[in-house]
Image 1 (cartoon, rainbow, N blue to C red):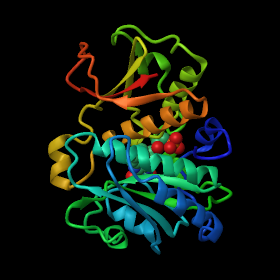
Image 2: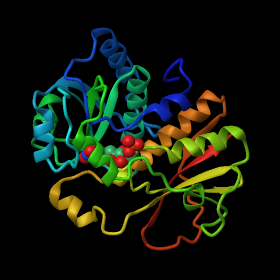
Image 3: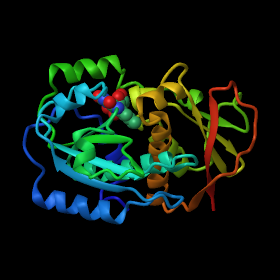
Length: 290
Ligand SMILES: Cc1cc2nc3c(=O)[nH]c(=O)nc-3n(C[C@H](O)[C@H](O)[C@H](O)COP(=O)(O)O)c2cc1C
């Protein structure tokens, strides 16, 4: 369990915070977050990641140079995560899931956070976590005490990314095939859990998650945004595949919501091999209800 607060409230109160108030995170809160990170560092299929919060002065200016699109103001602390470089199976998704769990914990402690995707291999962030040869650093999180008021650039970025907009249910959730929108997930808890997936953050707010319910199994697909971070580009620039992280974030929102409702289930790879609308769709993982 992430917090005593309802996870639905925590998810609803999270947003990408780009305006911080220049103060460091209080010792007690940092201690609680560090304990959580030490105990929640392994993904659903066993991939281990390590995390560290550290101070990087003028980190906002550094992020600007590292191809992240955010302009962070007033944050000196960053949360960095390292994971094994072998990402041929679901490791990146697992990393996204574990890191989003930490973000939800941070949100429940009153902290502001913002995911940052970029090229970090040789950056100060890699030094901060002493990145090893066999490891990769897929993302960095700006973290800290939120400012009372949003800065101008922050407001502008939110407008450009349409940050407060989410796709409707009928574009995201389906039953048996991709032609039939899912009207009811079968239980109040699952309806809420899917709504929490819909509110998840995603890179450039592209919301690439699609879920197909077949019997009692919820199959997660990645619907790649055309032209967005093509494989060749990712390899050339050493960037993580951010849309795979997005799938992991959706997994975190679904599982945490169901946990709170005592709805048991597990992650499994059971591709239903149904017809997909186009080549941009990739089956990823399934939530199998008990
Ligand atoms: C994997 C990932 C990478 C992101 N990278 C950046 C980034 O580099 N710069 C930035 O300002 N926001 C970044 N974001 C934040 C998204 O733009 C944001 O989640 C989305 O617009 C929805 O807004 P919300 O988080 O306020 O709900 C990223 C989000 C995710 C999930």
